[in-house]
Amino acid sequence: MYQRILLAVDGSDNAFRAAQEAIKLAKLSETSTIDIVYVVNVDKIKNELLLAGSIDNMELARQRKIAPVEQALKEANISYQTTILKGYPGPEIVRYANEQQVDLVVIGSRGLNSLQEMVLGSVSHKVMKRVQCPALIVK
Image (spheres, rainbow, N blue to C red):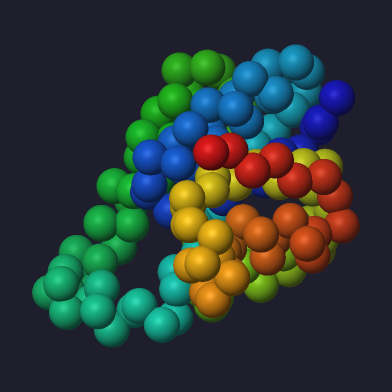
């Protein structure tokens, strides 16, 4: 099955649902590992820092976003590693997935309506179109 699964997370409910699906897939093989990838969006760093008050608080807030997924993986006894990238989420996830030669990308859907998706595009759609492996988008 899938040996190396990239799970893109952002702290949202959709990302947690994606994690649940990644866990189901990882359990199909005893040797599967999950790469949790969180991308710090360069467009939002200043706002995050203003809200957090300090770099340490900002890092703590990011860890809180990832913690539920890590906890679920620990409880499921799934091997994982966490990587935090900086940049624009779509291109960074694609770059990481292609460079690391993962077998599958699992990502949550943001639930944009058709007009929003046409105007803005979605990270999951951008990832799906550009990765060199299968991608699972979880609603």
